[in-house]
Length: 221
Image (cartoon, rainbow, N blue to C red; front, side, top):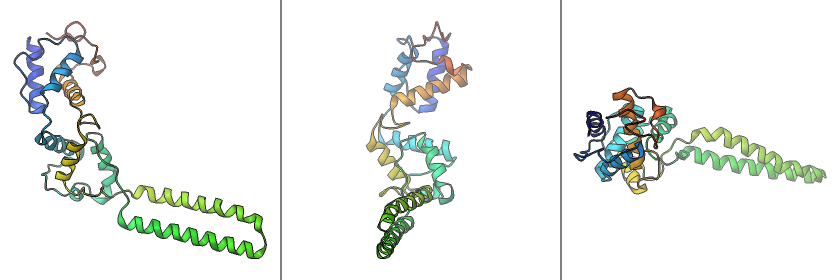
């Protein structure tokens, strides 16, 4: 194993907090082979998921956390959707839900629309304009669509049972590898290898393809 592979191994160990075998890279001929070796060294214990979530939060929102840290302190209501999407690019997250207040507003709004529609239908029926009843469901549908568009941005509540970083770790561990961004060992291996090659060797990311040969195409020794 040449010096380039030693530097790659050190960079990977530093970023992942793992110990690679002494013969790392000796049997790899392509980037895909190297990714497979890295992936095998990545653990899937709870500690691994704790570190994964911690790194994702640190990278996305710039905040160090503990398992007991409430999610509400990491994701304040004013920027919750934006931060949630940022973290969701690193680890698999459930969709945000409507807050209890918005759910009550939605129910009240639907009842108001239904009541108004019935009142309009009754008025038109009493006036004898039965043909105008066709406009009632159309009008109700327009109002419901408008209300849904107005309320959709208010999906700012966490899923049931999700209130702290520890709960987020449990969910990521339950989902399992390969079920979302950042959880697959292969996905993490690709990311960290790309980061090492670009950072340490100033390599063009476009060259780092699975079929690229480590020596002939990337010039590693």
